[in-house]
Length: 145
Image (cartoon, rainbow, N blue to C red; front, top):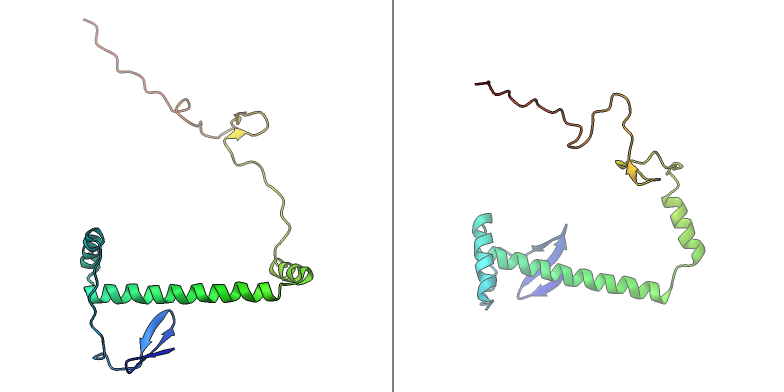
């Protein structure tokens, strides 16, 4: 939460919420590269957004990413100060995977027989694969003259 010019703002479900009335805004002027402006104009028109809405959303996302980067930094620093013990990591991994059943590999799912690099043999009743297996149409016969 922060205080800026009579407006209290805070994060709520990923959005910046303002405690002040909607009339308390500050106008800014920004300079951007022409290519960026052209892309923004095309996208905002397509999405039906105003320039102010686009800039406000971009600034909110920038603030959110800066705050997330700070939270990540604090998280890493905390683990550097007090690393987890090996037995703690093993206990967490065991708990996270405790509901998994045993696993055994099934038959190969490739079109080739993996042991010899040869095409897999067709089983009875299986449709032929690829171009060679397609039914060939008989060429129309030309009448004799």
